[in-house]
Image 1 (cartoon, rainbow, N blue to C red):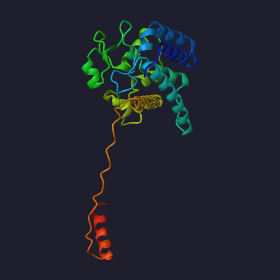
Image 2 (cartoon, rainbow, N blue to C red):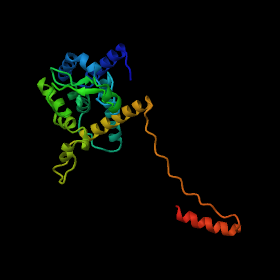
Image 3 (cartoon, one colour):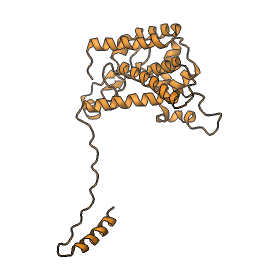
Length: 252
């Protein structure tokens, strides 16, 4: 997707309104300071580095995060309607959704995504961006939480675990949280599960948008046709029916 400069600015300003609407004043002020300190970087960031992942274009990060928040709020209503425990506040849900991918901005000193200068990798592997080698390795959820604590932004238990394991079982390290063998070890909040669903939904929608906008949609394999037997013509209609019944039973 190609956003104009005006559209990038408008999306970023809309993104900041989510903080004003859902986050308590003290933390809202801290978050907005963090985001405005890195406004240009965040405004131009993609949500991923490979074109067939999701939102691999300038402005893709902001677009993705807002979609995750919207999905999370709608899923909260669905979970409530279906009788699930709502054992977290709306602020906790939105805070976790807003910051689930915060680590993708990189460090305070340097951005994480850089344009891949290799045309071969862009063309043949879809690697539009590369990771900035200046930044030390950290999984995205860990860096998200690290950046928040660097700014002294308080995080509740529900928010912490929601951000930490929002990738669900796509991350092997999350297994102890999701796969438990005792009542005591089970998750104490539904927030991480709901946030994972919201993130997964948003990412899938973004992939489908990318696929529809390109000519690389993968064709579904055709259903294998049943074998059509040839029936001799010099036999009676009754014999033909008997033969066809045999063939139909063989090639079900």
